[in-house]
Amino acid sequence: MIDGRRYDTFLIFGAPGSGKGTQGQVLGRVPRFFHCACGDVFRSLDTRSTLGQEFLRYSSEGLLVPDDLTVRLWKTKIEAQEQSDLFKADIDFLVLDGIPRNVEQVQIMEEYVNVHQVFHLTLKNRDELARRLRKRALKDNRLDDASESVIKQRLELYDAETKPMLEKYDEGLISHIDASQHPAEVMLDILKVVVKLDVFKNAPKV
Image 1 (cartoon, rainbow, N blue to C red):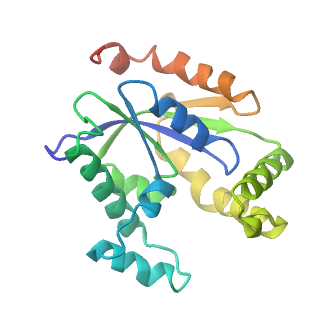
Image 2 (cartoon, rainbow, N blue to C red):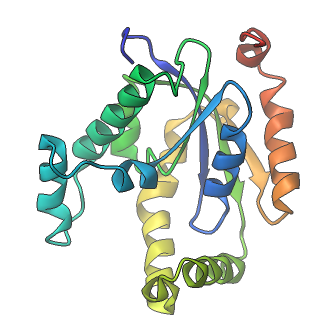
């Protein structure tokens, strides 16, 4: 937000295992869409920087990173990508997943993002969510994340802290997408909504 203009934004939202990262990545490959995941922000963090050192003070002690620091890290990352022309804020839509992840972050980020649509990936079958999380953890060789206790904790945290943020958005901004479908069908449903939005119709075509 170098010029003070809020980013035109789409949010990919859902429980762990619903496929929001996958859908965010795919949509981000479409010209004029730029994907940013909260996990990418933390993974690319320069721990030598002032913000990096502040982040390490919490993470090294196993403490939750405060919401204001999380948003500052995200903002620094986005502005760096804007300055390097990877993200062209005047013509690109910003696609976010994993952030904001609670009501407090929604409120902090209102200054920076203009949310045009929230795509809520719904999957009511918790056993299927758990199966997907175990599969992903094993694929990424994160064996600890495949344990039943960790998966249960992640889903409970989503219910307690993340899911309530949906109430902060007008119902007209929320599209509920069936995440039990094939990923291609999920993306097709998302695109069907996007192309009907006025903000998309009025956006530059090249």
